[in-house]
Image (cartoon, rainbow, N blue to C red; front, side, top):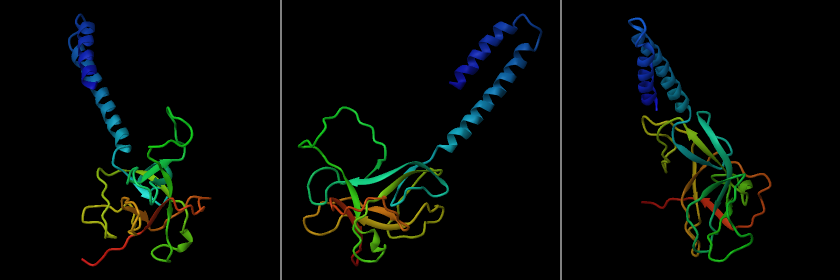
Length: 211
């Protein structure tokens, strides 16, 4: 777009300045190219503010200081003992938008449920969060790459820590359907009023067996 603009400026300037005094074309082109260079620099700065990688901060409604909040919402996933649907966990926005649908329950459809913390012991989180719904925040990092590193509380050399926490997933009990592992913030929060304890979709802290 910018290159096309420069070419058009050249053509228009040539027609306009051809009958004028010597140097008219050169001076006009220099001024226009300087202005377009400033436009490019402005675009680079503006786009740089919104560039980077997105990640989900589970258990929080805000982002770290050096990241920007895209939206906050609620963690949702499949039922803990019903097959099918998806195994990944989603961060649903608070204000969903609907397209074409039929109201009411329909058979042979995937289903999403709000996810609750299952924290029966007081480690690693206080058990006051037991059966409470999980909030989430989608964050835009100012850095080009984001990576979740399990089993570490510090970052490798050259990397910057966005947040740290504990792995949570579906229970390993027989009859439970699998889910992905998510890193839940160590200073977790819960959804206000979300403490019904329906036990439809749940996550538990993760243990590691000896290698």
